[in-house]
Length: 292
Length: 291
Ligand SMILES: NC(=O)c1ccc[n+]([C@@H]2O[C@H](COP(=O)([O-])OP(=O)(O)OC[C@H]3O[C@@H](n4cnc5c(N)ncnc54)[C@H](O)[C@@H]3O)[C@@H](O)[C@H]2O)c1
Ligand SMILES: NC(=O)c1ccc[n+]([C@@H]2O[C@H](COP(=O)([O-])OP(=O)(O)OC[C@H]3O[C@@H](n4cnc5c(N)ncnc54)[C@H](O)[C@@H]3O)[C@@H](O)[C@H]2O)c1
Image 1 (cartoon, each protein chain N blue to C red):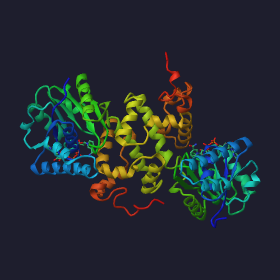
Image 2 (cartoon, rainbow over the protein chains, first blue to last red):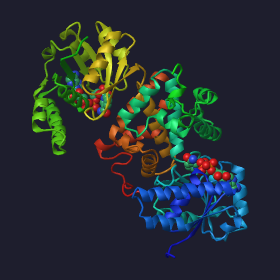
Image 3 (spheres, each protein chain N blue to C red):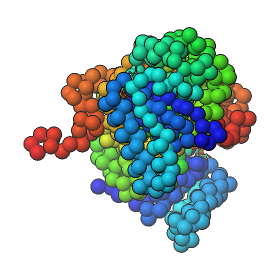
Image 4 (cartoon, helix red, strand yellow):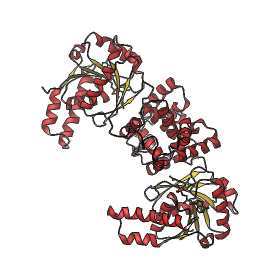
C-alpha cells in the first residue's frame, strides 16, 4: 500500500465513469466501479481494462504499471462496497433527481469525511449537493471525454461547499495527474458555456448561407487553427447529444444563443446524428449516397 | 483568365509586409506603397526577420530569402504603381484613409486592374462604391501572420464581377493559400464567428466566471485550441477587436457583436494587449504555471 493510497468509488460505469476509474486506479488508488447492473459493471470494467492493456501494448505504460492499475480496479453493484471510499465520483446519467437521490443514499453508507464529486456537465452543483445532508462535502469536478486522456478538470463549488472540501479535492485531482481550473457553479462551467454558443453560431452561419459545411470547417481550421472544424466536432459529439446539452443550458440561461438552431432538429429527425449513424454534416458511410 | 503577375500592396505594416512576402514567394514582382522611406525600411526589415527565422529553423535557404526580397520594391510614389494587374490594399483600418488612397490608385493603374482590400471590419461594397468601375473591386482578407495562415477569404461585394472572384480564387491558390469565398457581411465568415465568442468570453471574465488564465487553460486543454481566447485578444489587440466588433454591431444592431464595456475600459486605460505590454494575460500578475 502506497502512503497516499485512497479508496475511490466511481458511480456509473459508463463512458465517463470507466475513464475516471482508469485515472484513479492508475494513480494507485483502490478503485471501485459501481453501477446498477452486473452487465453495466462488466462493460465498464472491460472498457477500463481494455484501455490499460492497450496503453501497455502501445508502450504508454509498462506491463507492470498496467497490471498494478488493473489490480486496483474492482466492480460492484452493491452500494455497501462504496462504504470505505474517501472520494466518491458520481458519473451517472445527467438527471438531477437521480444524482440527488444517490447522494442522499450515500450519506448513510460512507463516513462523514468522504468527499462527493459530481461530474455533471450541465446541472447545478448546488442543486445536486442539496440531495446530501452534508452539502459542504460536495464539489463539482467536470472531467473531459475521454477522461483517461484529457488532462483538464473544471472544479466548481456549490453554495454550501466547504473550502476544506475543495482543497482536498484539488489535492486529489492533482495527485491523479489532472490540471484543474477553478470556475463557478454556473450553467456549462467554462467549456460548454463557450463551446455551445460557438457551435450553434456556426450552424446558424451555415443555415444563413455564409458558407458550406466544408468551407466553414476549412476557414476555422486554417484561420483559427482549431484542431477540428465546428462540423467535424459536432459529428463526433453527436447531434442528439449537442441538442440535449444546448437545451439544458438554454432552459437555465434563457438566452437564444444557447438554443439549438432548427437544422439540428431536422438532422435528428432524419437520423443524421453524426459519425455514430454514418451521416451527420458529413457522410461517413458511402453506401448511403443515392445511386451508389 | 488573369494571373496577376505584377502586384501592388498598399501599406507595409504587419499585414502589408506579410502579404508582399507571400506574393513575392510565389515568383511575382511586388511593389509596396508607403507614406515614408523609414516605413519601407521597417517593412523590409520585418520581412527579412521573418525569412531569417525560416532559415534558422532550416525551412529555407539564404538564396530563397534573397530571391523573395529581390522581388519586393518599396515606393512612396503612387505613379510607380502604373502597370500592375492587382492591388491589395492593407493600410490603416480607417474608411477615409482607404477610400482616398484607393481613389488615387484607381486613376494610376489600368482600367482592367483588379483592386482588393484586406479590411477586416469595413464594407467592401461601400469602398467599391466610391471607385470608377466598382465591379473590379473585391476583398482579399488575409489572416495574421499572412505567411503562416493557410486561409484567405475572397470577399464578393455587391458589385463584384463573377470573373473577378474566379480569378482571385485561382490567384489565392497559386500563392499557396486556401481560398474561402464569402459574401460582404460584417466580419465576413471567420470574424463573424470569432467576435461573438470573444465578446462572450470577455463578458464572462468581467463577471468573474474564472480567472483569465483558467479560462484560457480550460479552452486550450479542453478544446485543443492553440491559444486561449484571452491570449488571442492580447495578440489581436484589444483596441483592434473593439473596433471590429463595434463596426459589426453598428452594421447589424445584433447584440452578440455589442462590445462588452470592459473592452472600452481597457482601451481607455491603455491596456491594448501585447503591443502595450498589458492586456488580459500579458503583463498581469497571474501569468504563470497552470494549477
Ligand atoms: N460523455 C461526455 O462527453 C461527458 C463529459 C463530461 C461529463 N459528462 C457527464 O458525466 C455523467 C455520465 O455521462 P456518461 O457519458 O458517462 O453517461 P453513460 O450513459 O455512458 O453512463 C452512465 C452510467 O450510469 C449508470 N447509472 C445510472 N444510475 C445509476 C446509479 N444509481 N448508480 C450507479 N450507476 C448508475 C448507468 O447504468 C450508466 O452505465 C453525466 O452527468 C454527464 O453529463 C459526460
Ligand atoms: N493585423 C491583423 O491582425 C489584421 C488581420 C487581417 C486584416 N487586417 C487589416 O489589414 C489592414 C492593415 O492592418 P495592419 O495590422 O497591417 O496595420 P499596420 O498599422 O501594421 O500597417 C498599416 C500601414 O499602412 C500605412 N499607411 C497608412 N496610410 C497610408 C497611405 N495613405 N499610403 C500608404 N501607406 C499607408 C502605415 O504607414 C502603416 O505602415 C487593416 O485594414 C486591417 O484591418 C489586419
